[in-house]
Each structure stands twice: as C-alpha cells, then as structure tokens.
Length: 413
Image 1 (cartoon, rainbow, N blue to C red):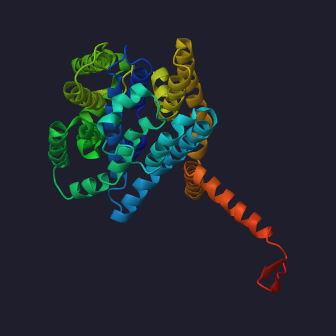
Image 2: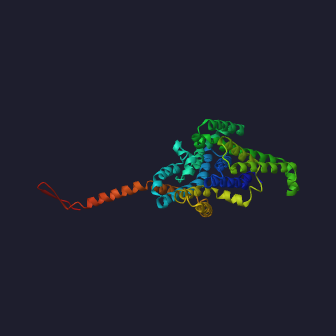
Image 3: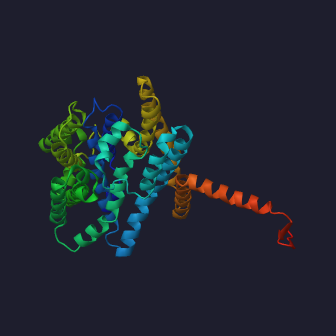
C-alpha cells in the first residue's frame, strides 16, 4: 500500500478508543456515583483530536502555507459546525418550549458563549464545572470541550508550520508540551481544567503519536526482508511470532489499565488520573492498529456517532434533572433516547451534510448561526417588534385635523 493510501486509510481502532471515551463520559454524566472518573474520556478525545489534526496538516505539508491552513480549517469546520449549531438551535427551541422559565435567562448567556466557542472562559467559584454538572441546569455546560478544541485550531497550524523548519518534530513538540504541562500543574483548578494552554500537552501527545506511527509505518515499508516474510507467512504464523505476541500482550495491558481507571468506582485525584489516562491513551494508539477488541463493529460504530451523542445527551439529561429527577426509570429512558437520537442524527444529518459541497455547507452554517442568534435575542426581538407595532398604531390614530390655537391644520393621511 502506498504512503498516500495509508494516510487516507481510516483506523478503526481509533474509532474504538473514541467509543470507549464517549461511553465513559455518558457513564459519568448519567451515573456519576458509579463512574466518578468517566470524565477522563474527554482527555482521550483531546489526544485523538491531536492525532487527527497532525494527520490533516501532514497531508498538506508540501502545499503553500495559505493552502495548508485553508485546507485544515475547511475540513475541520465542515465536520464540526453544522451539527454543533443544529444541536444548539434545537436546545434553544426546547428551552423556550419545555423548560421552566427560571432556566431561560442563564441558558441564553451560556448559549451565547457556546456559539462563540468561549464556554471554557474563566469560571467563578459558583461556576465550577463539576458543580454545574451536579446542578444540571445549564444545557450548554458540555460545550466547554468543543471550545477548547476550536481554540486550539487557531494555534496548531502555527505550531506545525514552525516545526517543519526543525529536524526533530518529536523533540519540538515535547518541549512545547512540557511547557503546557507545567502550566497545567501550577494553575488553579479552574484554569487547568478550562484553559486551552493547559490542554496543549494533551493534543501534542496525539500529534506525536501520529508522527511516530508514520515513522514506524515508513520503516516497515522500507524493510524488504520483512515485506517478503509477511507475504509468505499466513496470519496464524505471523501471530505466533514473539514480537507479535509481545505487541498483543502490551495492547491488552494498556487497554485494561485505561478501562480500569475510567470505570474505577472511587474518584481518583485528577492530578494523577489525567496524565496517566492521557499518556496511556497515546501509548495505546501507537500500537493498537488492527487490534481486534478496539476494531470490533460495536465499539467502532459507537465511535462513529460519538460526536452526535456527545452533543445530544447533555440537554436531554438537563431536562431530566430539572423536570424528572425523582423518576429513576426516566433517567434510563433519557439515556436510551440520547443514544437513539444520536444514531438517527448521525445516519440522517451527519452523513448527509458531509457529502454536500463546501458552498452549501457554508450557507447551512450561516443559516443555523443566524437562527441561533435570533433565538438567543428572541425577547429583545419581540420587544422591538411590539414597540414598532405600537408606534405604527399611535401614528394611525392621529386625527385628520389637529387644532393649534385658533388655526386648524388638515392632515392628509
């Protein structure tokens, strides 16, 4: 297989890791007492995103800088924005329709932050992420991670382009990642959780993983003896080789440790769990290609619709929290509804818009964005409309003749 073909080949094992990550997040949101460490699935998302970003940038590495940047933003924004703005729009419609009036004002402010991708802004003590999750009154709490990722999009091309002028990309990324990690460790909880600069190290681990796998694959292709050996051995013989068995054992160990941390029923301090899960996810991605467990259809399909599921599940959970909290079976129903709606959205909307032309997607995003802005400012728009209507009515009620002193002035209307 050519280098270009391998770069375009979709790794099903990464979708499997994505599936594990979204299952962890759902477990934490719906059943936090059972899965108190499930939030670490978001850290896995950041590593996976770093891998994808590096792959997209490497594909355009030989292009002019402007083309490289344009291709990167075009591909990422066409993937993220249509569904993101659609879910915000539907959440706003439901906010006005079925949520209590007391939830409207605070959620409109959150929606404004969400459409601008600044949901990860510095938080006060009253706005702690985990407290907001526990309260369950904000439909857009979960958009903080998308805000972090989008903000990194404006940084990563600069990091990548500067790295192309250096001989060792891995060392360069390791230095930047180390600086980011130090910033993460010395910052307070709110900053270390929300700041994109405290998350750069996680994205860069994913980028380093991509560079390593590319180097590893290139090395394999250049080894003619290995190619000849593979061509004359069947799968059973290959799997029996010591190096293959070692890789399989290593894969299993890393998978088990990662899943164990994510599902451990006692909360682990983030200072320990975040670096461990992030590093182990990167280590797993280095060797997981072709892994049967991670590449199974169940996990990979969950990974396929994980973006829809992440966006959809939280507004539904918020509705349960505000309206149906006393009904435990309703929580199970909301979880199942989230999964069904996510599958439907993925199959009907995501697959549809990803096949549209760039111009059509741009028009769709603009339409959704305008609709969101209108709904966020709906009350003000109604007030302006009513005020204009009232002024028009008053103007129409002015009599035909108005008397000033002894003079009569006729007004033709």
